[in-house]
Image (tube, rainbow, N blue to C red; front, side, top):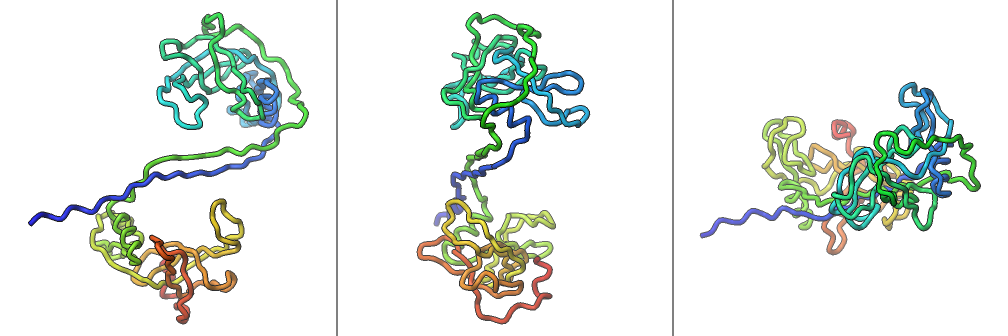
Length: 326
């Protein structure tokens, strides 16, 4: 007789993306529009320092600053680190150096990539110059990267001594907003407790775990009680029906989600659970969803989790029955 092998812990690649849209004030607008025109602008602080990239408020006094100046497209490497394995969407597809470059006329350094054949070709104090993108659109990526200056000399602490010159920041058709594509790629493992929970969902069962100390049942289980801090191993099947404890009406359609708005997303306390999970409410007009509504899961053919929850037709739950789960 052989011992049963432990269940396989699930793993899956996961991508989290969030396109962040922001408007630009006069300083950042001038900076990015300047890059589109292949001009590098900084801002002069109250104590006379020139900051590149520019900021809108003095880091020492917190006063608003608007005095724009133009600096040179060349400068000196102040520090660096070699990147031998570039990730997707980084500035260069081949190995490169991350460098901090103090452009001539600036008192602070800008972070970007340096195109170099290897780490032996990079050093603190080396002179570099901006390589502009073929198509400049008004973004930091208009600086494709830095590249060594042809003479290969070092600038020491002072570079070539270029001074910043005043600039009015006026350009035709200024850039007024940007979309920053935030993305995180990683491999997610739900762990022992949530692996069992996910596998049970595939069998159309909802399984939580009970804390041996406070005896609360957590769904989805976390492997440990968040209140007592002790491990949870006693599995308990809950539901399938539950009670809406609170909810929100969604009026903005999410990208890649084929659900017509408005719809309702709710916290649902399944019968026998001491923690509410969230799910979409269907089978009822959105403006008829209410706290205390009794609901049950609806599964689609081949689905590994409930598609949504619908009313059971039971009378609403009394508020005292779920008030501690709101």
